[in-house]
Amino acid sequence: MPLSLAEFVDRLQESGRYTFTADQALRECPLSVVAFRNAALRLERQGRLTSPRRGFFVIVPLEYRSRRTPPPSWFIDELMKFQGRAYYVALLSAAALHGAAHQQPQEFQVMTDEPLRPTVAGSSRLRFFFKKRVTRTPVVPVKTETGSMTVSTPEATALDLVRYLHGAGGLGNVATVLSELAERLDPGRLVAVAEVEADVAAAQRLGFLLERVGAADRTEPLARWVAERRPRTIRLRAGQEAKSAAKDARWQVLVNAPLEVAE
Image (tube, rainbow, N blue to C red):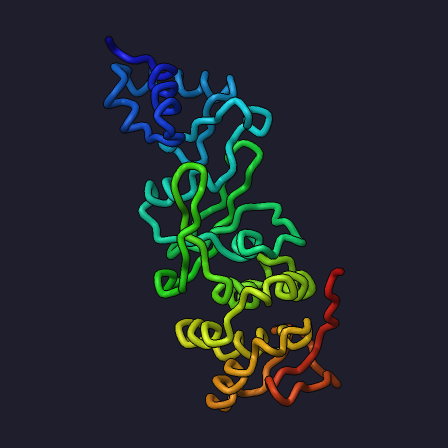
């Protein structure tokens, strides 16, 4: 018997699948494109579907109807496959997954290899950050309710937080997150990430911040790596005045901004 879109959605959910594309639905349901769009719109209004990108749909289970979407972790991997983009869960979202959840992110943050506009799925906002060599960043698979997703390692997350301050809530927030993330950082892997990213200035700022939040025991190999590159003196906050700023000799950082770490 021909399937209605509602029946197609029910069958997917019964089999443990929570995403589908318009093309997949049209292959299973004898609907015109216009009829499919109208049926999908009705299901969205009923709270059964949400669509973070045109042509891509997420099934909303009953327990998430009030939020109008399941958590982004349920569908981010399939969404990025649909868009044909390399990705990893990054910044504050990655830090929270690694146990640094003091400052819960208000958005789900994803690093991609192409600039993408933010999108909304129900009550969830997904924000995308661009990195040209995203596939070189060390990542780990993290199991989700529907499969798995790719997440930056604790060390890669730490360096990204320093490089993307604007997306991580600013200097003070990054310092607070690093204070919680520090126990998960491997000193040798920090150097490996710095090598991959080839960003000496970010390594300088990260080393300085880790020392300031009481994680100096994680920084010795990174300090040697930085010193070998004979770094120039940089500002802790790029683009901000540094007159009369104190200089940290080990990291060659002008401390031109106050640093407050939340308790």
